[in-house]
Image (cartoon, rainbow, N blue to C red; front, side, top):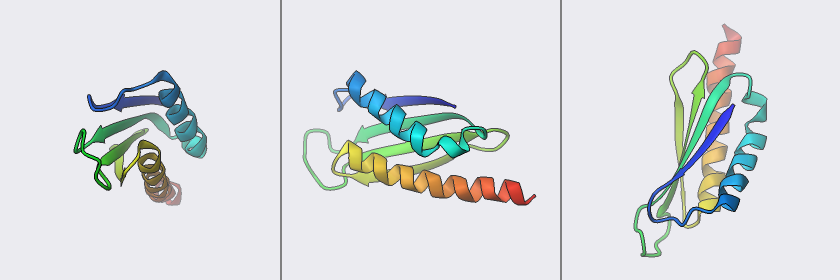
Length: 104
């Protein structure tokens, strides 16, 4: 399972944050690793310099082998909280999608 992190121009992307994201997502999605080929995480700040609630978006797209990609978005005032929200959503979505595959 390959993990790729992308940010928009409003974030000063650091190597440490990228490693943090890759480790967190890899650990939390580990049980799906045999079904997922790639996970892309996109961070964006909708209001750039303004500090407003829920202006940081984290979109996670998981490419499940043989199926259409599964994507979710988390929103918060910080990257870490938006990531946590998105990870909860992608885990639930993957449980549903992969659970349906196992039933067949």
